[in-house]
Amino acid sequence: MKGYIYTIEVLMTIAIIAVTAGFLFGNSPEKPDTGSGLVKERVFSALEYLDAAGLLRVYVANNTEGALEGEIAAVLPVNYLFEAEICTYDCDTTNVPGNRSVVSVNYYVATYRGDFIGKKVKAWAWTDA
Image (cartoon, rainbow, N blue to C red; front, side):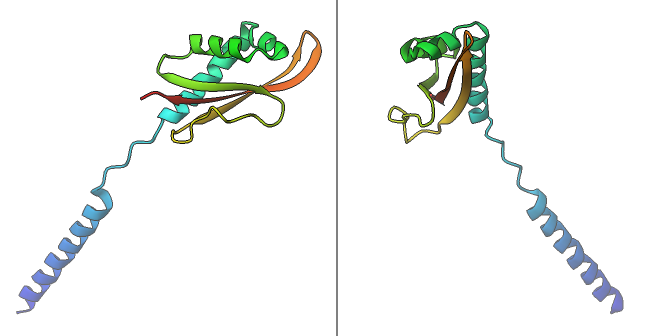
């Protein structure tokens, strides 16, 4: 009789361990959302490219936001939508959609041809898909 009780105890222990392991390791981990990080990296790289090409500082110094947005659109992929503002402290967010997952990038421009301008380019970006 002792053998039967011992066997039942062992089977119950194995069942408890199996159920616990099933709950702990049964769910596969979720894939991280790298899409927004990729959008942010590409927008910052586009601004960095324009700065290295010598165009960004000219647009910021002359406050030509439309030309800046045209250059950014030429560099970014076609499914990226964005809004860019040249500002000093507070930037206008009227053209930024409220119903999308939007990332923002700040790029600071301090000088142009030895003159201090102290402005920043704030770009908001999201994907069309």
